[in-house]
Amino acid sequence: MSSSPTSGHRLLTLFPLALAAFLLLGASRLKIESSCSKTSCKHVLQRVFSITAMHKTKIKSSSDGVDYELESYDALRNGSCNIFEGEWVLDEPDSRPLYTEESCPYLTRQVTCLRNGRPDSLYQKWKWKPYACQLPRFDAVKLLESLRNKRLMLVGDSLQRTQWESMVCLLESAIPDSKKSMKKIPPRRIFTAEEFNASVEFYWAPFLVESNADHATKHRVQKRQVKLDSIYKHSKNWEGVDVLVFESYVWWMNKPLINATIGSLGIKEYNVPDAYRQALQTLGRWLDSTINPLTQKVFFMSLSPTHIWSWEWRAGSNGSCFNESSPIQGPYWGIGSSHQIMNAVRDALHDLRINVTLLNITQLSEYRKDGHTSVYSEQRGKLLTSEQRSQPEIYSDCIHWCLPGVPDTWNEILYAYLLYGPSRH
Ligand SMILES: *[C@@H]1O[C@H](CO)[C@@H](O)[C@H](O)[C@H]1NC(C)=O
Ligand SMILES: *[C@@H]1O[C@H](CO)[C@@H](O)[C@H](O)[C@H]1NC(C)=O
Ligand SMILES: *[C@@H]1O[C@H](CO)[C@@H](O)[C@H](O)[C@H]1NC(C)=O
Ligand SMILES: *[C@@H]1O[C@H](CO)[C@@H](O)[C@H](O)[C@H]1NC(C)=O
Ligand SMILES: *[C@@H]1O[C@H](CO)[C@@H](O)[C@H](O)[C@H]1NC(C)=O
Ligand SMILES: *[C@@H]1O[C@H](CO)[C@@H](O)[C@H](O)[C@H]1NC(C)=O
Ligand SMILES: *[C@@H]1O[C@H](CO)[C@@H](O)[C@H](O)[C@H]1NC(C)=O
Image (cartoon, rainbow, N blue to C red; front, side):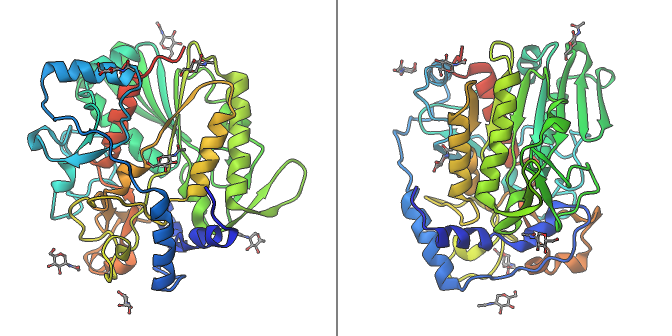
């Protein structure tokens, strides 16, 4: 994808500096900075748009008959259905959400938007409908059976932690209270289904490679420093894990440059996409030298989009994701979603000897401007006060997602790949 260095730089700088505030517990006050004039941002936006104009493929009638279900499994296995191309529908509103804030005891306060005061709940009801097939129905017991005597581990930052929380909630209702447990062994959190001897784990590593943000709770966002060629401190804990799911994005995007080290070279400022490529190479070397493709599966989540400026989807407006209650209709790609990072991921996975499956959830999540926690969340480990909530322009978190919500769909897709994915051996 051709993008001039200046526009690439522009895209990165656009990513708000403000972000920092939400990535951490020790958040400072958020400022929405408009580091570009409205017109030039729009210009960039249009350029990105024309590149990613969506190609609608055939739309299957959404009859939900058994035949169509079986056909869908075939279409997934033989690769004729691109599960990432589709639309959000309210077909069977009663089928969503798949669990509730009340039913799942493991949800953290960061994601329970209704309990935190969110007035609307339609965001829990949308179902992702691929054009060419349907997503298999999530069957917790089936997944637990397939994880018997196995470990599933999600590795990454707070977005990945939300996906992990979602997965735990999707599974836990199938297990009686006395047969499940949750423990924290920082930087890991481990959910265990005892009868299945299966665990679903989260591992905090926001840059995947080593960094000074690796402490599970005391991590600073401002003076971040990344060791682009060191991963062992983390990766030794990933050895032998049966299913690994990686993700890393927002922590890189705070500024266009990042302080990093490679080998014995001292600390240097690197351009973020270059540094990101180096980090993925380090991960790739570990994967190629350690993963047994016959017994282990590896996935990589594409970047989770943000919805920070409402003018991106509603010309002339001047808000955030706050007060958004329905998905974006039609083609949309936000300026916060870096094509340079996308390409870095594509290239890195392409260069590997083992197969790593990219779950390209960016586009489907782009539509969901309504899915973020906005002011119904916490900062510095405390719920926003009503006074803070009345200032969405300062306090909206348009990076993280409510649960139940969009990350449930990421897990339905992971489920589809684990149980019905194209066979890879
Ligand atoms: C894959 O399966 C679907 C559904 O059964 C079928 O319509 C399609 O023709 C198959 N494609 C290939 C390439 O086998
Ligand atoms: C339980 O699962 C672990 C891997 O998660 C495995 O090493 C161990 O052998 C399993 N135990 C039994 C009794 O199968
Ligand atoms: C890198 O570190 C130096 C020294 O601490 C600091 O002045 C500079 O702003 C940092 N650069 C970035 C991109 O954070
Ligand atoms: C956008 O909103 C902010 C605060 O909400 C305000 O300070 C600013 O003047 C507004 N800008 C425009 C162009 O309306
Ligand atoms: C939120 O949306 C409602 C209706 O859609 C509107 O009446 C209200 O003014 C909006 N509030 C803000 C702060 O934008
Ligand atoms: C992911 O999908 C988007 C559009 O849906 C596409 O632009 C992008 O290139 C894909 N990423 C990779 C790494 O294939
Ligand atoms: C990777 O997957 C392809 C099919 O998608 C298969 O042909 C190839 O053998 C696989 N490679 C390995 C190392 O499993």
